[in-house]
Amino acid sequence: MQARATSKYLRLGPRKARLVADSIRGAAVGDALNSLKFMPQAAARVVEKVVKSAVANAEDLEIGDVDELVVSGIWVDQGPTLKRIRPGAQGRANRILKRSSHITVVVSPRDQS
Image (tube, rainbow, N blue to C red; front, side, top):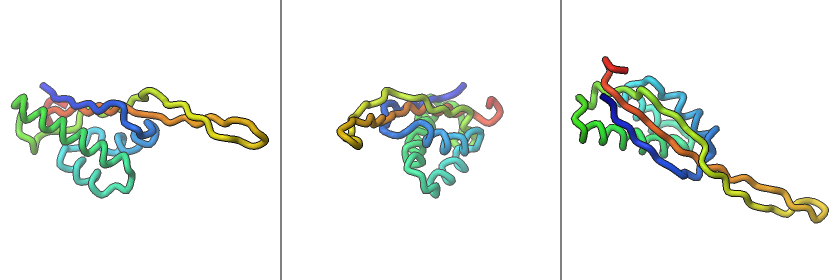
């Protein structure tokens, strides 16, 4: 049994969020939340909220003890990209890509991961 939480359309580049997600994959939930709390990246705050939501979903589904949960899966997908135009040199227009992310976290008991 596992619980999942998703946060979509986050105005955060997926490459930056993947660096944070890779650091907690497979970790115990307590250790993951502790390490996310002290990371300097802005993506750590967002990932922390999604992990807490997945833990709350696990409690609601009565999957198991919260201390025994593990981040069994976490992935960051690219969401829609906002295209903006910025003035460039010699009257040209340069394109700015404002990327977004979808973050999904799956937690499960330690013996099922």
